[in-house]
Length: 289
Ligand code: KIV
Image 1: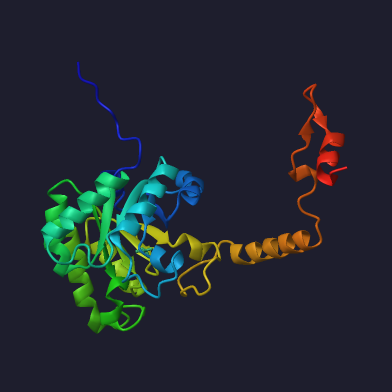
Image 2: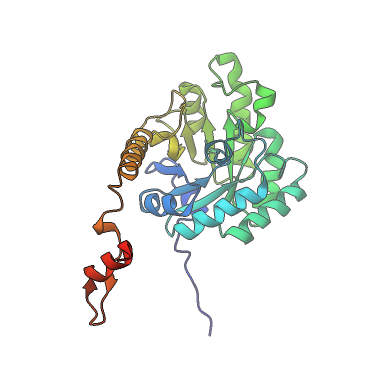
């Protein structure tokens, strides 16, 4: 007797099927607890290599190791049960050859339980995307501003703001779609160009600093929560958690210094021999009298 099991999470083919449909909601997630909070409200959780900058204080995403991505991805998969989890392949883990990319992508899929990987690059990565997708690994593309190439580009500046620069980005988008990616991130591309690319290709575009015409949107969670010290122009801050955390820590610090914390509400009284709380026993223990 055979049994069939449905995949309970959103799948890469389901995201691909959202082209021109209901907008795809995506956010980054780096650890289990936040993944659990945001999971019911998004279609896609990206374990982005931006975690190198946001969580680990690197200046760019270039130093991020594969093992670190795997560790964070495991946490995000454990913390979520609904959204498709996509894991960034970090710099140096896929560019060398399609075979190296496959080996590392397979590690990500096997060790984390994620549903897809994301790689940066257009025309020059098409062969690799084709290699992975034809061997069972769903790939999300990423074109426009590709932060792993920051040393080549020179800065994290928006791309394609002059019409004369558009052609290579359009070629990149077509190459990624033609190679079998199920969706593509358009990062920091001029609005008109992102809208145009969205019309030109058959897979969903997911914008970050791109256009409302994209088939979906993604933001770095810490940026939209007001937790990042500097955010790009394209980020809308939906909360000010940085201020809230600082306020809470100041109040905690003041409480500790004046011995107002912990109060009785936050300590464990003794249990007397009849099973009830024994305040007198507790006081005796504390004072030693
Ligand atoms: O690493 C990341 O967080 C990303 C998003 C900005 C799309 O790639």
